[in-house]
Length: 185
Image (cartoon, rainbow, N blue to C red):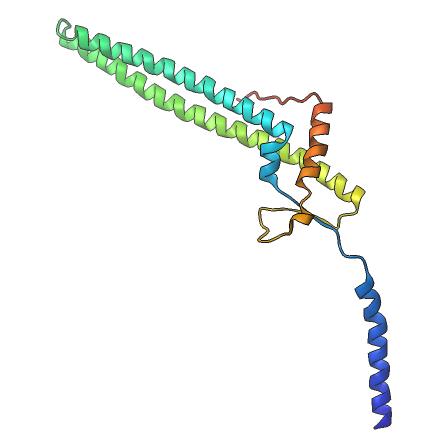
């Protein structure tokens, strides 16, 4: 019985010797990044937002011009319909329907192009800040850097978004501070 007790004491002592160094080890350094905040507050994100809005306004202006043309055609048709032949009136109505359909097609194309542009710019910004986050992680000894998209709870102390934005803004301004916003056809 005494040997069993001695064995248990020895095993317990050995476990304590193994467990104590584990408890004294450094805590893993984990960082969290808010992607939405980067897209909204970084210099690149702000420039992208302005440029995309500018493109959207240009597209909207083009659509409004075309709508105005149709409005004028409809007014002309209403004014002159009494003196026009039925064939001429039918032809003008058909032209108006075609132009209305053309505007719908153009609007859908513009919406698709704008979505493609937004996605391309967001992917470019994400790719650049991910490379910066990896570099920062290596330099500052992070075990893990995650995004807030799948995190349910995280203390603010691990949020490194602001630090990453500062580094990203510096890198962005060094490379000229602009994007190529051309739509790829």
